[in-house]
Length: 149
Image (cartoon, rainbow, N blue to C red):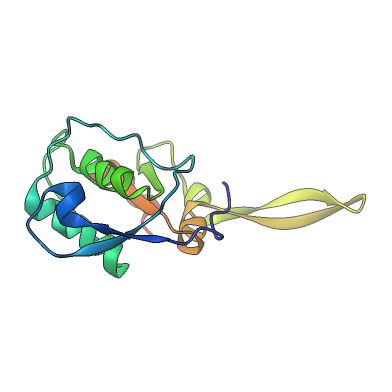
């Protein structure tokens, strides 16, 4: 995955202006998009309370849990907030195809200076901790209990 470490939010965005919510709150955002920023859906309608919870997560670097029935737009809501902040967002489907190796990482054999050496290749969790990214765990209830950390 691309290293986003050099990215730092470089602007304050008015919640009232971008999301139409009556508040003076401002949240950090980026002036430029990158490959991990979702596309803006101009027809998307924001739920006030959910939007403020998501924005608070971005503003204060806090984890946000959104729950609800399948297909109600929880992940899309996060993506659309991220899209308007130009904030990188990665969606991880916790289905039977994901493993601890995908999440944590693994040792891999690489060639350095014409020699085989073992090197740790980090997974999505260590990468996301080191980079400004909204990490969305999707379909949490579908994950295998053996995957729990």
